[in-house]
Length: 205
Image: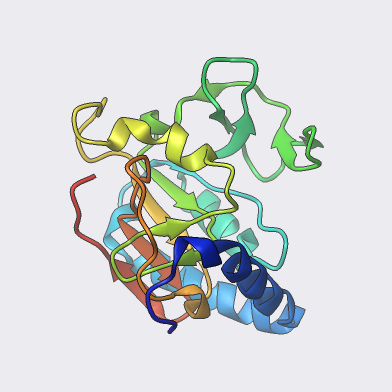
């Protein structure tokens, strides 16, 4: 694990970790994803049927296919992120099942054709992509700010529903780094699932 990360080094950190996960073989990725799915299914967050935001993995990310299949089999309602511009929210979530078609958005990311939207803060749990995370639950994404802006409702004083949604990072264990620099608009994770197990975080938002 690296020491404290300086804000000036975030671009390099993103490049390094993305390269590291892309170096993994398909077999290594799938084995890690199966172990992570096993850990998540035993975690306390999803022991009851819930409305769950998920994402389709890419760019060497820990695969979400085993996770999605397992959650669907257990009867959870699944939602995928949809870029909502020019609507007032930067990102919404559309209800989706694994047998429903998808189409690419303007960035080439697959999204549901179904437009049964929910705002992210209307979900119970959101499985969250990330490039890096630290021991305090701070998350480093790709830099677009979509998740921070979407889940700003979790910040103290703006919550629509106290304690929800729970934001659970989905990553390889090597993506944990030293303390990440925090900004006022950052929204922290409630936990992270890796192939090595579950980490839970306690914080104010």
